[in-house]
Image 1 (cartoon, rainbow, N blue to C red):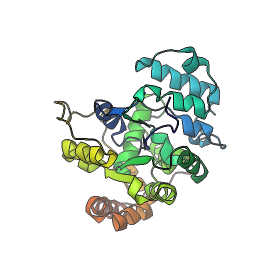
Image 2: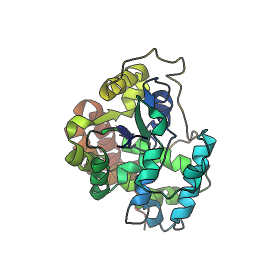
Image 3: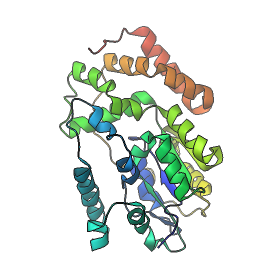
Image 4: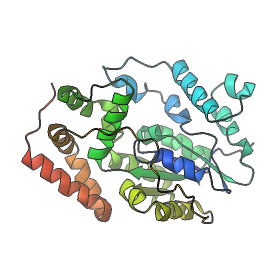
Length: 289
């Protein structure tokens, strides 16, 4: 069994290519990922899960979250050992997920980790101070709308209702997952900027093979021949055009965040700012109550 847990974590952002990234990292012979979205550390948080802060959704109990994680793992082919199914969820249980890694680098991807408190990030550091962190970000307008489409596909949102979509934009869980600069600050304060790779979904979409090679280089593994499906999108949420009023609301809500990202990452995030300025300046957003 590995004594120090994972060597790397993918922390999101949600709806920014994490399923695609998991699929292609898992194909590398020098990498081991047990299954996607373990959700261990966010279930260790002292506070309630972010989702339970939304009045529109009922509070989720820890046991039910664990059941969903285990069900997802079994669907992904994880062996159903008694230790895995019935063991106490603690750091030893978590470390056991990586026991089959051998000499390979081990890691996992759970987008909810982008919302972890700094206290929990420091707990992860104590487990492995050398851990590397992957954080892929996406234009907030596109990320929020993709999350809305996913919720609509799951029956949680009437995407044809502008009022419901405007309210969705303001949900705490949606906002926390889109506060990229705060996420970057928390993780770099603990692990240092050299151990945190900030990637951009636009680069992934435009040049997926080059994006993947950059991730391999960051993790310290050799490049491999790119699979034939490297450019194929994964886990789409269905197509539904965004209403101009909803787009303007998202742009207005996240304008300060977008400005900060454009300041720090001008090459990739400056187009976000140009778009957000245009939307926020040309349309008067409809405010949710």
